[in-house]
Amino acid sequence: MTEILRKEVNSHDNLCHKSNLVFNINGYYKKSDIYKVDDTLNYNRDDGEEDSHETMSSLQFSPLSATTQSPPQHAMGIFNCTSLKEAKKTLTYATESVIGHGSFGIVYRARVLETGDYVAIKKVYQDKRYKHRELQIMRILDCHPSIVELYQAFYTVGEKQDDVYLNIVMECLGGSMYQLLKQCNNVSYKDSFPSCGNGLPIILVKLYSYQIFRALAYMSTLNVCHRDIKPQNLLLNPSSGILKVCDFGSAKRLLSNDMNVSYICSRFYRAPELIFGSTSYTTAVDIWSAGCVVYELMTGKPLFSGESGVDQLVEIIKLLGTPNKEQVSDMNPAYTKFEFPSIVPTPWSLILPEGVNGTDKMHIIDFLSRILVYSPQKRLKPLEALAHPFFDELRTSGPNIIVPVISLNNKKNKYQSDYKNTHTLNINFLFNFTQKEKDLYNTDIIERISPEWYKMDYK
Image (cartoon, rainbow, N blue to C red; front, side, top):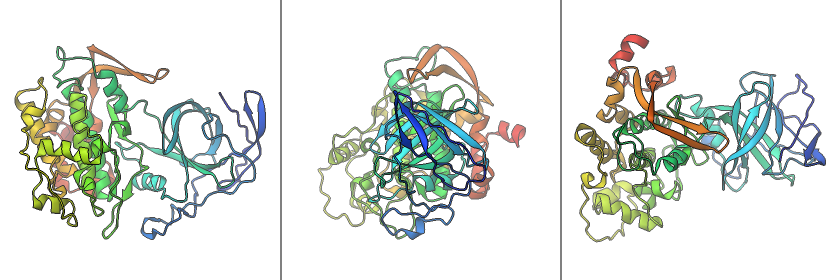
C-alpha cells in the first residue's frame, strides 16, 4: 500500500506550516496534512511533567494543532519536508517498508526522491503521560561516528486532533546486530576465522564491540545514559564494518540528585542495580549491558536469559556468585532486605565455549570480568575499555584487517554471509576522534587508544 502526498512548497514558509493535500489509498481519497520543517525549529515542550533541567532553549517542543486528518498511523506515504541541515531545501520522503516496530511506534525505510538516498523515519506517538526525550538527546549527541545520525524531525497529526506523532528522520544503515546474530547462529567459520560457539568471528566481535564502547564513552562524558543497549539497537553496515548505536527512546541525561526509574532496559541486558531497584544509578548500567552484548556476539546466545526480573538476578548470581553486603550497598544503599543462599562464582573459563585459546581467551576473560561486576563504580569506564588489550589486535594489525564477506539483502531484510570468502577492511574510522571527543577526553587516554600507525599516517 502506497500513499501519495503532494504539496506546493513555499520557500518563505517558516517552521511547521500546514497545507491541504490529496492522499491516495488504493483509490480512496481524503484530505490530509503534511508539515514542513526548517532549521529554525523552536518548539515548546509539553510532556505533562515538570523537568526543567532537561529542557534546552533550542530544543523545546509543542504539539501542532490541526483541523484535517493525517495519514493512518501505520501507512506508508510520501512526505515533503525542509531539510534541517540546508535551510529552505525541500526533501520528499517516500516510505517503502516497515523495518522496525514496537510499543514506541514504527520505523520506516524511506527513499529521498530528490537524491535517491535512503533514510529511516521513526514515527512515535507523543503520549502526554510520558516524557519524550529522544529528539533532544539525539541533538545533544550530534553526529558522533558511532551514533546514528539525526537528519530531520517533523510532526504529524493522527485521526484525532490530539493524536500527535513525532517523525524522526535518521540515516539508514541497513540491518541490526540482532539480525546478524540470528543469521549466523547456525554457521561455523572455525576453518577460516577463530570463533567462540555460534557467534561472530572474534575479529568482528572486537571490531563491533570497540564501536559500542566508543559511543558509550562519548555519551557518558555528556551524562547521557542509553538505558537499552542490546543487539536490536545496534545498526550495521557490514561492507564498511561500521556500527552505530540507535534508538534513544529510553535515554536520559543523568544529573546529580535526579530520581530515575529502575524498571528500564531489556531484561537480558539489565544491570543488577536496576533489579535491586536503584533510582540513583549511573551510566555504568550501559557498560553492564554492553558487556552482555560482547558475550552474545562471541557465542550467539545471551549470557543471562532470565524469565523474570527475579530470575534474571538468579542467572547473574549463578555466574558472579552471591553479592556481599558491600556490593549490595554499592548497587542500592536503600536495599537492606537481601537474602540469598551463598553461591560461589563460576570461573569465566567454564562460561566461554571452546574455539578461542591462548592470549585471546585470556584477554576476553579479563575484559568481561572487569565489566560484569556487581559494584557499578568498579566496572571499567568506556574509555578504559577501549584501551584494554582485548582490542590490541585492531591497533597492531595496521590500517587493514581481513574479515568475512557479509551483505544485507534489503528486499528480504536479511544478512547474507559468505564465510569462505574474505575482503580487506580499512579501519582508520575506528580512531578518527572528532574535535569534540578530543575536547572532552584526556589527551593521555587518546594516546593510549590510538595505534602507532594511525598517529604517524593520519594525524
